[in-house]
Image 1 (cartoon, one colour):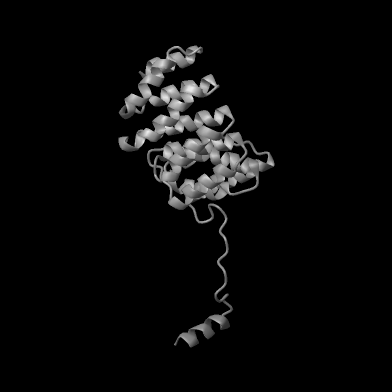
Image 2 (tube, one colour; image 1 turned 135 degrees about the vertical axis):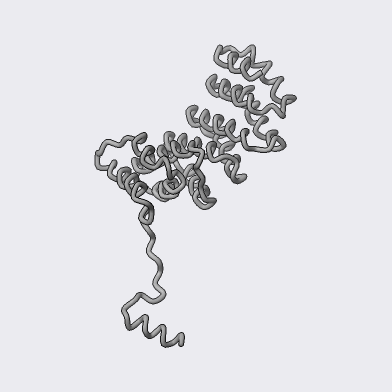
Length: 233
């Protein structure tokens, strides 16, 4: 019976055991999602793109749109990558947003490989909004806090780490607290010290680590750092 079926398939001209073609991003999605994917691609041709309007079009299907956008991120076109990452950032703040583990891994991989500060900032914020879905999320955010030389990117990473505190078990807060205290005590950028002080207000379970650093920050040379420390205490 199996032999007859194989013969019939070949006779009908069907591609037997052919490799499946790679689908274009959004190809199997709903019309609204197809529309935003098309718009982002067209942006490379000088078409004006309104991220907020694109977000409005798919606000009721953020997870479906996210999967298509993650596929779109894997491109060598810097304009497409930037717009896809910015829209993904916007959608990730939606309470109905969710994403598959494979797409999350793709986001992390693209983030680590990127040299575009805007793309990195958008994807880091996305990770913070996703929350501690896997251990890699927190590890990646901490990596950018500790190693990225661009202040705007590191600040986004600090803010993302603060977001994780909302969903993370208090028993896992120690590592985050230590990282933030290190920034507050030793980083040369006042804006990062201020961001770290603000983020520490989310980590109440490690007061023995955080409070001494925040108290010392009350004597920081920069007003914004002192204000952030007061508010955190």
